[in-house]
Image 1: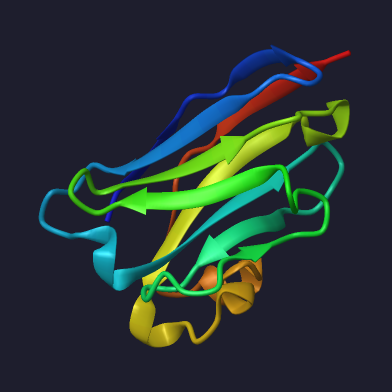
Image 2 (image 1 turned 90 degrees about the horizontal axis):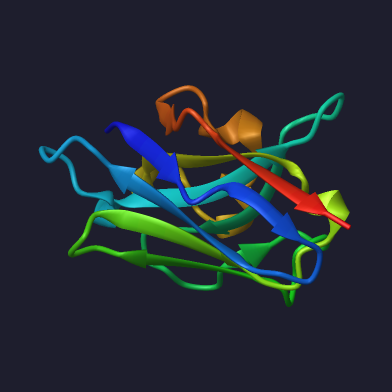
Length: 133
């Protein structure tokens, strides 16, 4: 699995962005993986904000993004998305996607614990999101 994020950038407060996370290794499909989006702001710990199990049931959203962000996946494109609406300055961070084989993750909330991703999990390189007021 090789995860590549895209879609980050500079946006005004109140605006929207859609992040993508593509699996560049065609030998593996994300369909069998729990997936998640994390973010890390300067001086802060990495925070799990939205995750899905491999069964795509009961997505988990952190309190800071609930009602504004939506996670989804397109198995045909081997890609995971994070739709971010009503962005605020506090959303400024580097955003990372992660994947871990579904047999190792029971709940979406567990996937959103960064300590649960490793070992045996995969991380993308990150994409910067900056929200200006």
